Image 1: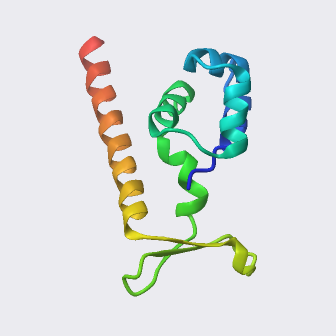
Image 2: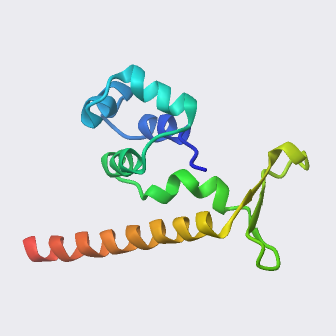
Length: 122
C-alpha cells in the first residue's frame, strides 16, 4: 500500500511548492488532495502525476513498505513495521511485489528516456 502521507513532506521540501499549487497542477481542489492523503487512496494515474510534479519516482510512496521486506519461502512478502505488534504486520502477495518491481523499472526507463532527451536538446 502506498504511503500518501509522504506527499505533505515532499511538498514541504520542494521549493516554491504548496499543497494548493500541487492541487492546482493536478486539476483538483485542495480539499480533494487532502482527502486522498487522509484516506491514503488514489488512482495510480494520480499517484504518477503527483510523483512527476514533485520530481520523485513513484516508488518513493512505497519505500516504507519495501524497506522492511522479508521474503519467506515463496509465500509472498511479509512486511513488519518493526513494533512487534501483529496489527502492524501486513502480508503482501506476489502481485503487489511485482507491481512495485514494475514501478521501479518504469522509473528507471523514464529516467533513461529523460537523459536521452536532455542529451539531444543540448
